Image 1 (cartoon, helix red, strand yellow):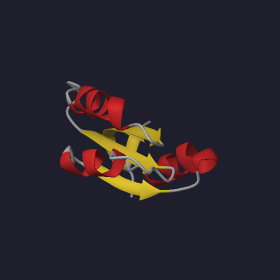
Image 2 (cartoon, rainbow, N blue to C red):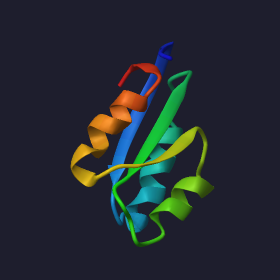
Image 3 (tube, rainbow, N blue to C red):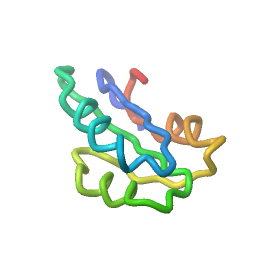
Image 4 (spheres, rainbow, N blue to C red):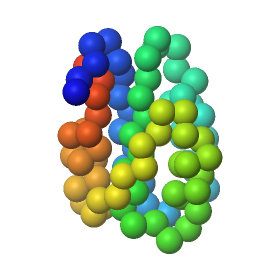
Length: 82
């Protein structure tokens, strides 16, 4: 269900443990009143999922093939802005 005024940030990722912490902190620190962060994991074998769960300020951990990750994340986003 789309939520009017919410911004959805879709982050497709695979084996991005080194950069995901910084990326999520940046997304979660936006000044827009309501921000949803959608993390779509393309089958990581590193600590990507653990990091996404730890920084779970509205983070959804979804799994999808890497080539479809962005589109899948966008389809699951609830914000009226993407």
